[in-house]
Amino acid sequence: MSKADDLFVSMCTDILENGTTTEGQRVRPHWEDGTPAYTIKQFGVVNRYDLRDEFPALTLRRTALKSCMDEVLWIYQKKSNNIHDLKSHIWDEWADETGSIGKAYGYQIAQKSHYPEGDFDQMDRVLFDLEHTPYSRRIMTNTYVFHDLSEMNLYPCAYSCTYNVTQHAGDAAPTLNLLLNQRSQDILAANNWNVCQYAILLMMVARHVGMIPGQLVHVIADAHIYDRHVDIVRELISRPRFPAPSVTLNPDKRDFYSFATDDLIVENYQHGPQVKGIPIAV
Image (tube, rainbow, N blue to C red; front, side, top):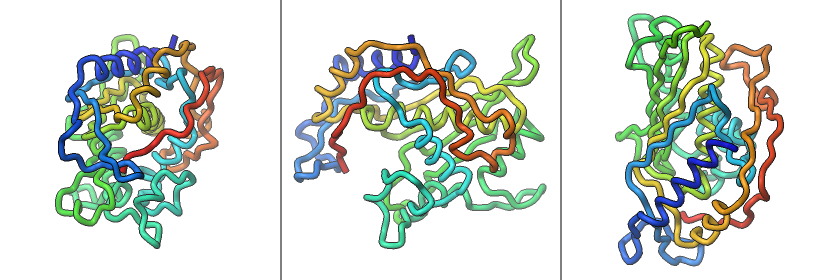
């Protein structure tokens, strides 16, 4: 059965049974009807997925993997902060009349700095370092830039990626691992979406630098289930589980900047019914 399912069920069970509630506290998010959106939460959740074993897609319900990839490309390849460059509509609520979400996400990845080797933006620097100094402990991106927060329409949730290379005996190539830091996560709406996004990002970067995609470590500071999601989550984690799907990239592509969503190959994805009409707190 899918290891991602096992981790998801364990995490949700722990939050529901051992988490703390924000009910009655002053909270920022509200439901569409104006009611405060309270949560049950756990602090400091860490989940570890190994792409050498399987791709971490939930089978309890379907995760839209090509849409996940589209958003990853929007941020790290197109380096865009405009929803007109994104196929899905998940960011529409935070966009202004021009489609901009402010100085957030892709805007920050595109910012260049001067180095002795030349001028690099954040993603180009990651690729350069992995090719030239792969065992550096300084290979990372960060979108939580304090002096620009006031000009972001939404503060970044998943904000920092740290890349780390390991060499395992007998492997033909080094292994590329990724640690993702997230300040806050709506577990029902976004958990597996983010996991699959960054698994795909890891796969693309590993392909570009000729490495094996390895571990994705996901650190969530505030892992929460909203009050109006509790019953949905309880039903979801009670469902049957299936083997993980096969998810690969077009074998003819290597360059990070050449990948498109059509290059994601998803096979044997067996899953439960989709959860529809999830209320979203804003």
